[in-house]
Amino acid sequence: MYEVNLRILLAGLPGEAVTAIQQVPSKERFTHHYTVVQALGGTALEDGAFDVVIFTEAAMGELSLDEVCRMAGDKAHRILVTEHPQALQPAELEALDALWPAPLTATLAQYAFTRLTEQLKARKDAWMEHNYWQTTINSSPDLIWYKDKIGAHLEVNDAFCEVVGKDKDDIRGRGHYYIWGLTKEEYEKGEFVCNETEEAVMNAGKAMVFDEHVLSKNNGMRELRTYKSPLFDEDGTILGTVGVAMDVTTENEYRKKVLAMAQHDRLTGLPNRRYFYEYVKEHENEKNCLISLDIDNFKQFNDSFGHKIGDEVLVLFAATLHEAFSHGFVTRFGGDEFLVLYVGKHDAETIRQAVRTFHDTLRERSQNMKSGIISATVGLAFDPTGSLPIDKLYQRSDQALYYAKGRSKGTDAEWNEDMNR
Figure 1 (spheres, rainbow, N blue to C red):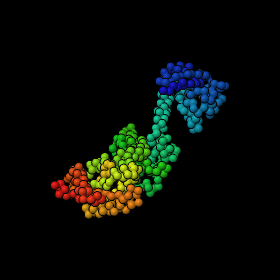
Figure 2 (figure 1 turned 30 degrees about the vertical axis):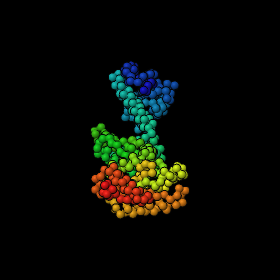
Figure 3 (figure 1 turned 90 degrees about the vertical axis):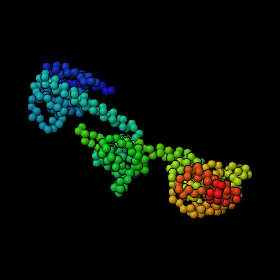
Figure 4 (figure 1 turned 45 degrees about the horizontal axis):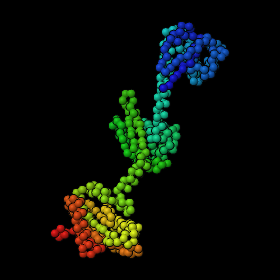
């Protein structure tokens, strides 16, 4: 992807050394442009004009080493060819990138310059790889981080900084509770800090996926889908972990809303027929009691007062049901038909009392309605063994309901074998 035109100044080098250097082939994506001079005085050396400056002590003339390095510029690779490296002071050595021995023979020149081009190529490739990596992670909307074995953050991307409200310099080397704004007490409780999953990944030595909750001072509770992998050293030891997290908080909220819409009746807010059968499947082989209810004379409400009043009747009926049978699963099964399902441990007499309470509350609440007093007929069927299929239990509760209607609307009946006969 990149192209580098390497501008090289050779100052005061022997002719055979210059020829040997110029014969060294350039590396892939590199080209070499040479300028050969005997002295560095005048305008031969201009700030920023060269990427590599290789010079002898003789070429410096009256210039000091500090002056030569300053003129070459900080970005230039500065190499001194000298017979007296031991005479250089620490500050002078610090200003140089390399020392080559003098006299510089063709063989030494070719060897040293080849190694130099390899170093420059490796440096450029490393920069490019870092550029690829940084551009990639910072282009991602997902949170990306790198941690050492004890949980200190080594690097994060821009999305991570945005979520936690801190810049990268403030994050590097810091732990979870500081970065996410938790108190020390919250962190020590171990909730919403992801320590266990980091340990799991390092212990397993492979990539793993988790659904995690993270508490953020700036953004509250967040739901994350995290992909974590161990980072290995060359010898196979684990250095730490890398994590990628998608914030699925909003997505999960939408999913829950869509699921709720699919499972609940829009008018009354009660679970619908579909959700009823899902609930039954989750509680197979448990003791059951099923209550069937319908609104007496509901068709007359719609015919006499219109569907708006009919809807108000349904809403009042549903709310009263939900309150009276708070420990049961209340369903609008369709139209004006409602079911209440009890599973697991339940007391039959408590359920019978709930039915009586429901009758009384419904009459009381509907006294001031335009439609007049609302009543319901109720049928109960118990299955103490949990062995009856739900359709069979529904048939029994429906038989009990129609048995009660045959006696008088606004009453209830409990299924028994006589109703079958």
